[in-house]
Length: 284
Image (cartoon, rainbow, N blue to C red):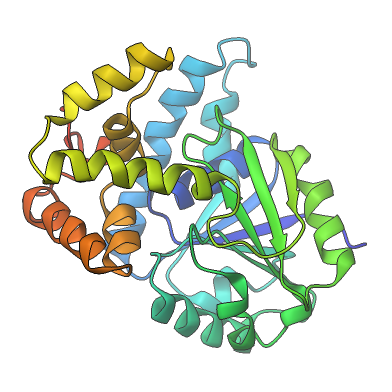
């Protein structure tokens, strides 16, 4: 079993930034990669925002720990430089199969032989990507929940070709970055988390898209009746609009109608959710 010391995160959107920050917060050197300087600048702003979130949610942490995390983060737009000495690469790019396959094709040519590849795909199976990695034995899925410093579970799922030692390495690594690992015994689209949550979020969207209720009222019913802190549209704002747009846009006809509705009413208007300050709700 190998030891993970250096981590690279590919994609610095909402969840990619959280994965990078959480890993660095727990003492690891992290390289963050994205496609251009504009994306990197947005990543720096997300990381700065996470400093504020971590300080608020971990008041017992030593003074300066959240701020010091920024010193363990490096940023790259050059893929080869980003992964030059990585023990583990965690990919968190958009949930579009073609984008992921293209990235892994390029990654396989520049990453060291030692490097483990992990996809954070929400609904795509790692077996749909493994043949593009150049190392199916060292490839698996690590699926994180949003707001990972609070909802700190990570689902670990290999393919039939993933080496058992690679799964063991990732199961051992996860607690070192404050995560609770859960092994998925065989491939399942959506893992445990999204097998449960995607139909739930889709049902909520259908209620609104089909004109039955307003988002705030759907959330109110769910929160009060189940005694939970978040309704589905609050969850969607946390996740961000691009993920449900991609997930439902690649499903059935009804799913594509939902995706089009999200795009027209939210994405095209810059209402991307919590990260942009407005989605189904407005945030300070």
